[in-house]
Image 1 (cartoon, rainbow, N blue to C red):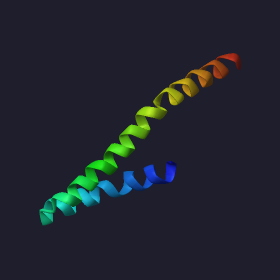
Image 2: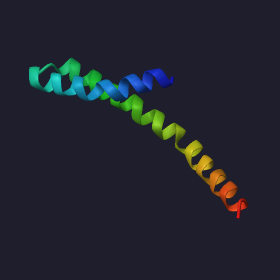
Image 3: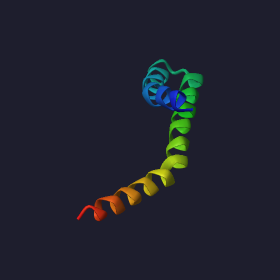
Image 4: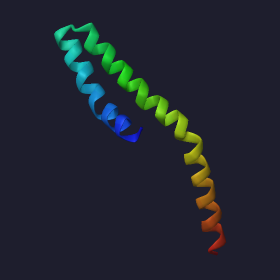
Length: 64
């Protein structure tokens, strides 16, 4: 899943700008869908990031 997210995060803005400049609704829709994939992936992995930060804080606290 990560390669798809990396691709969508880097390409969606270019597709949106091209779609807006050339007035291509289909291209703008693809850009919005790619952005939605990136946002959804970030929302799904957010609890994992919070847990990792909490565990890191505990480990740093143990090194006193």
